[in-house]
Length: 397
Length: 145
Image (cartoon, rainbow over all chains, first blue to last red; front, side):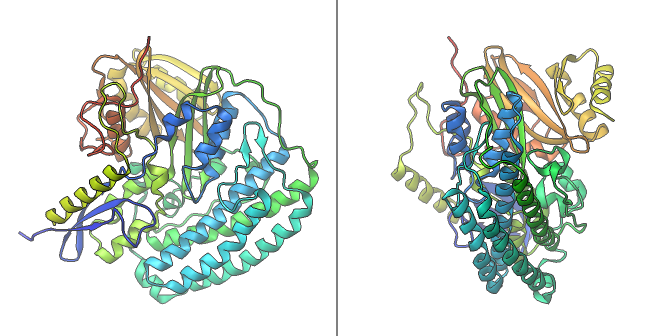
């Protein structure tokens, strides 16, 4: 019998931007099993949200994810507006869509960069992140923040995109389009990238249904699901665009879907900017009095896939129950399919290929109980616990 | 198949176990079912009607523990919620994870947060609470006066 070796990646690892622990059980260089440990990022957001008003919760859910920070407020707004049967103005719809799509552009650029970095192709990393910067500058111009833009509220948006800013946005979009051409050329035609990503980390259509994977991960396996088309919201029904899919389901297909989606996003933003010109400036919100008792389910297509929010309301000004499902929650679980049987070096890019977001995935737990008086972990105890568990892993291997 | 046909099919096929059907509008519906029939109805919804599983939401209410299994029919934008109500004392329900893997994590998570037991779960290990909080502490349970 061949002895299995345990290779831990994480909880804190230079390759990863967030804390998580993968345990790769390998025979030689081949990954035979994979386990995932979580719990390092829990913030108890679902329960916190019940303690806040609807308006305050927007700022909270915006902090679920540091990259696609608008996708959660987007889905949350959809959920509350469904519960309250609220119709927002066209100008607000366009602004929401513009923010959502600009975010997809910068998030996909971030992923392309990281993927290049994981493959040891740092030129792509530097290019992609360089041209992500002007998009973040746009956010600063629109909202005052490069990330966590605080643009959404029940019944509309907090800030207008004045018509005199449109030309600046168009200028940046033109630049990003040119640079996307360059990145597409660099990635799609590069023999090294082909060799590293084609046929690696394949997910079949059946795997996608089985694990309920969403977003580019699903679309790269030929499953054409996209909430923007399937359950349209905001200004998506008002503009023309198409859902990008690929068939192979490997890492290359996922890169292809993301890169080509950026063109669609640019086109959607351009059409929305045209739409803005036709709407009255400042007409960005409707008055909302009360949210009646009931429930609402809101969905939004984040860069990583469908974000789902379920909000139960009881007639007060806070959610009675707020369930959040980030796309990475289902996408990460596909590792079991994509990594087993690969070499360790291919497993790392397969892990990265779903663009996993761990701070999105882990929001659920509160680590104390006031009734029984079980200890609450403070910072030092957490560090001690982390050290202890790392030691345990070392002992195992 | 449109929403009405789907709801009618489920109602006709499982008339004894479907307790209530509520169509909020064309793209949103909740079907309250008998917990013992979850496995059959979920199988019909997932395999025959080709719904995609989104997530499950658990909630602790005065009625007991409620679980909503959210399913999505993407070609018509429909979200169908299968609702089961479990007793407050020793809540348990059949796991769906032997049918598809997507419920694997959320069932374990609900178990750790609410103490609901999922019978025949293929991988009943801890997901988020390992080493984080004590046995038998279910932080999302509420207290009712």
